[in-house]
Length: 173
Image (tube, rainbow, N blue to C red; front, side, top):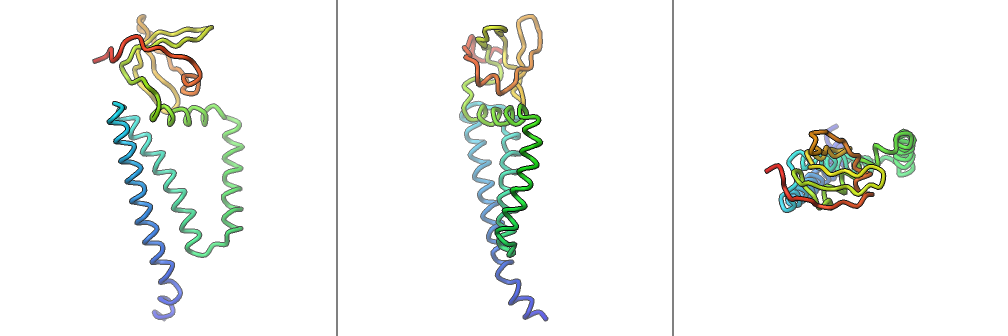
């Protein structure tokens, strides 16, 4: 019984262990890269933890896909499962597309947004210009504090579409 078990399952078990080790190393590399970028660009720790969560989700999807292949699930079945799941997710997110847009914008802002928490900025919006200090940068929106102590939540997807000027660097500290 045990020799049959080893013959049948030894190769997939070895590949599973190798794949998991590679994915753990990949995840650590991605997280350390995100931390290094965050430190280099003075990003806040909360934003770095948020990016780590996104990295965990990405690596989890890759792990599930790889393990399904290793254990012999047919390619067509995997394609059917993933296309069905992504179709349902796509339909759900299409109904609330702004959430996906804001999350994507939040990821882009982590790596490319030239302003940090504490910076005083001016958003050049024709209808509603804003001059405020960046109080926090969340997954979906920025928290901006005006000179009148008004808190404005500004969607991440809009902040990437508007021209912004830096008025004063790091007002809070």
